[in-house]
Image (cartoon, rainbow, N blue to C red; front, side):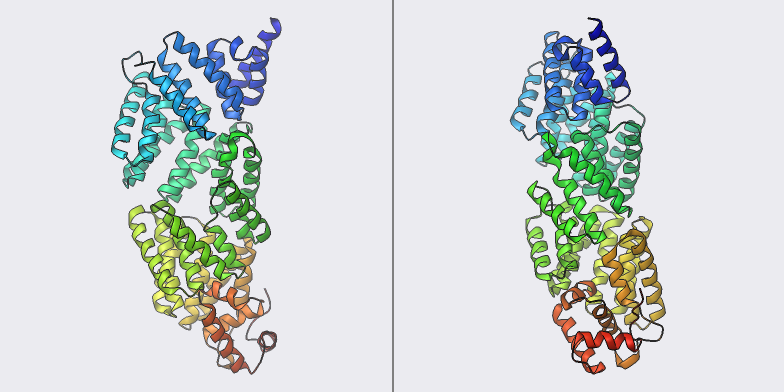
Length: 550
């Protein structure tokens, strides 16, 4: 008996200290679900669910539901049913999840004579999934009212955030984001339990990133998530893995790619077994993105493949990887397939910026124009600076592909400014490279070199080796562009030849078709009086047309 008391004392202390795995060990040693008071059983359930100990969590939640229901305590019984619903949904066992909510409905109204809030919330989930937004909002309004009346912080924050998601999905972005902010302020104020806190952080960041395309909020809530994670011990399981994945996505946008990889590898380890395996496709894709940007192409390929095996996304990252490797047909096939399958603004806006780049490289100008036009319409739908920046860059790319330098310049400057304001360094630097091409086209080589040097500094700091190599190939010695009668575009092509890029890879970098690149290469050979790429590269370096220095 004394041992049980000691175990229980330690369990409660570990629970209070957020040491959830250790708490589970002690709760189990103190008697487990059948040997604990109901309040301790519910603490055990929370610890086990956060730590990813699914069997323990389900056993404790079932016991709690039965005990509370037998006592006529409807609200806590329904809360246990809700978390059982969450656990079974996470594992893809939707019939059992729905079964628990059906059992909860059998308990009838709560002690205030109203339908329990967690039942309203789960019903609203289903309505949102089917597009019945107005009905979902009505249900959530009732849930919020009931939660406020009984001071249930978890339920109130959950219903508020879900209201925000429903509004965002229905196109009412300002109202929806206001609700998301309301919910997250409640989380930051400590009004929610750790189990709900981890879920709501991920839901808020995911909604802002995918549904609203609001990078400012993604950054703010990701930083808050990171601060919260730093206050608790690593706890493993699907909740922790999901949190790490969203934190890493923010680190990638901020240019902290190696840190992102560290977080993602930890997330993948934690999600590799049990219920978390259903979520592992997302961090594997993010891992591919970070490796691709760093130039770790073999690792990126492996990560994208692993994401596909887990049912996760592979595009547009895989198409951009193929483009980096010079396989333009595969890149175009992949992005076309993904566009053909995607439905809804969120899915389309994720693909369209890359589609413009890839389709231009493939010589599919009409398709690229259509993709850019659709991106423009979505910029109005989302009212998002990141989408506006992507659209401006796409318009600039289209102008560059047609050698319309004056048209390209204002679009690319706008894109660069928007990305700079959003503090996304990689995208800002990519716009600088495109601006350099346009400046060269209008004969302003000094401005072009300034943009390239700025981009190169960013790429060096980020570790973006493929992009740095391209910039190195474009940098010229002062006064060299006019030598041998080469046009600015031909000098660009020659610089990339010097750095070993194939025609296909050059087209991908300069947004030209392979046929157009071949024409430029032929003109370069004629003007330089050479017969091979090796001779052209040697002549370019020896005569100072191209600088070989990095």
